Image 1 (tube, rainbow, N blue to C red):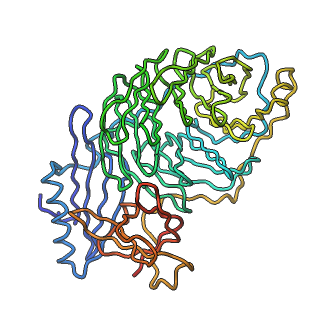
Image 2 (cartoon, rainbow, N blue to C red; image 1 turned 180 degrees about the vertical axis):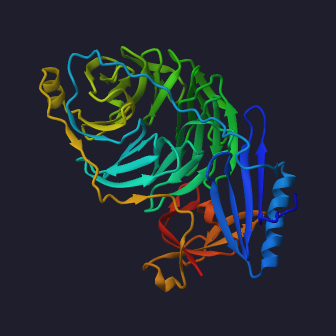
Image 3 (cartoon, helix red, strand yellow; image 1 turned 90 degrees about the vertical axis):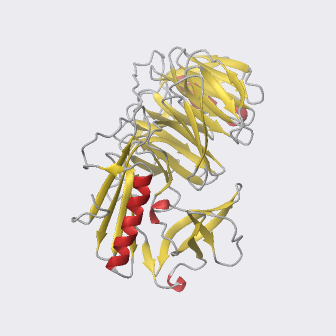
Length: 483
C-alpha cells in the first residue's frame, strides 16, 4: 500500500498479543488539508487537522506521518476487521437493605444509568454515570449543566479546582471549562479501574493490578505491578501513591523509586479514601480498615454486614461512613464503634462523599442521593421519621456540552475576552510543547494543553492560566486559535 492510497486515506493498526497495544492510526488528505485520527481500535478516537500551503506539501506530510507509524510497528489494516478490546465494567449486585430504618434523604436525582463518579465542592455536586453523562447540581439539587462524554464514566476526581472524568474510552477529560477536552490519553493496554490526580500527575489503577503514572504533559513516567489484581483503589499525596487491590494496599514512592510498604487487608479492596495521615480501604470481607500512611499499620477496623462498595470520612476522620452491597449506609466513630445503619432507598452506594453534615451517594440504580447526616436528622430517622424525598427533575432546556474536536478561531487577540493569555505550540526534542508568550508568566514552563488540537507553530488564546505546584500552567476557560 502506498503512503496515501487512491482514496486519499491510509488506515493502520497496531495490535499486540497478551494485552498489549490495541490502537489505530488513520491519515486522510483532502486537498491541502491533512486529518489524522487515532485511538483505541473500535473507538471514535481523537482527530487533528492541519492545513498546508499546497496539496503536494499536504501529501508529503501525510507520507511522513504514515512512515513514522510503520516504523513503530503499525501495519495497513481494514477498519472494523478487529474487534475492540473489551473494557471491564464493574459488575455489582445490590440486595435489599436489612436495616430497620431508611436514611433521611433530602433529594434524589436519577441519572438513568449506574453511577460511579462523584465529587462535591463548595458550589457544586458532580455525578458521572455509565452512559457517559456528567451532571452538575447545586447543593439543593437543582441541575445546572450536563456534559456528554463519549463513553462510560469510571470516576470523577478533583485536583485543586480542576475536575477530571476518567472514562471507558481510555481518556481523562478536563471538565473545568465550558467544553470538556481530553487532558490525558491512557495506553490501550490499560484497563482502567480507578484513577487519582495529584498536582497534575495522573495515577491509574487497572484490572491487572498495575499502577501507571502519567505526568501533566500526558507522558508515561513509571509503572508497577502490585501483588494483587483488580485494583479498585488509588489515592495519592506528596509522600506516596496508595494502591489497593485484592491482596491489600501497597504504597509506592511518588517518583517510582520503589515500594514503601505493603499491608494485607481483611479481604480484597473494593474502594479507597484518604485523609492527611491515613488511607481507608473498603473490602469484600465486610469491613473498612484504616491504615497509617507512614507505616501501613492497620489502626482501626469498621465492621459492616456485607461487602463494602464505598467509604468516606468527615474531615480529619472523626466519622467514617460506608456503603455496602445490601443497599445500606453506615456511620462509625473514629475508633470503630458503629453509630448507625440505615437503608439508602436507592440501591447500593458505589461512591460517596461527606460535606457539611450531608452524605452524598451515587448508587447502583443511577441516583445521586443527598442524605441529611446531621445528628438530629439521623436520630429522627432511627425512630422512623424521615422527610419526603424530593425527586429532582431534569430541565428541558438544560445546556449540554460535548468534548471539543476543534477550536473557535479568532483573527486577533483583541477579539478574545479581556485579560486573555496567548500561548504557542512549539517543537522541542521531537515533542510538541505549549509555552506562554504573554508577559508576566514564566516562559520556560509548559502549559497542560489538549493534544488533539496541538499544531506546530500555532498560537492560541486562553481565558486564563493558573500555576500548578508541579511547575506548569493549567488552562482555565475557553481556548481559541489565533489565525
